[in-house]
Image (tube, rainbow, N blue to C red; front, side, top):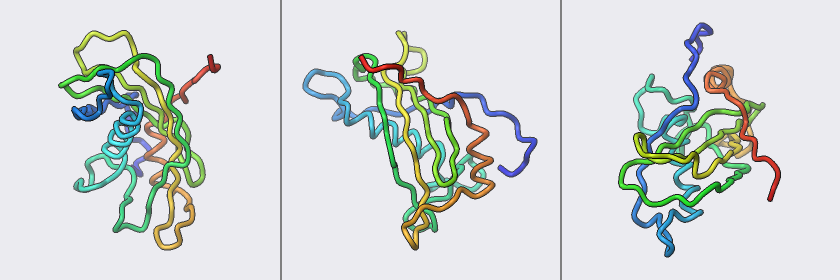
Length: 164
């Protein structure tokens, strides 16, 4: 990601995430706690290098056995409508909406599976991710190549609007 002439990335990124039968609640729709897992799954698949060969798009080299860990410092979710269970993977759309010194923000929208009728997003969300030095457990600054890679995915932050 160090080539300054890198082609712009088409945003948002689309990540298919399969639902589990257990994601449903007693009302037959996807439980709010399951939404957190879905967002995490999309984020990790997109930006982390867990188990991927080099060069397959991961922006951050993090993990239990690495020198960098990540933590979610803040997360906000705005539920827009009830999400039913789908057997086809749902479409999680995500992008980076802020790049800071030791943190960045990921913005998301969850939509029905590709090709399914849609009335718009089921929810929108944002998460602030902080990078930690694994040895000290303290925040560490983004490296230039990480910052550059994240900026390739930079889009507008979610406008959550006023509370009802």
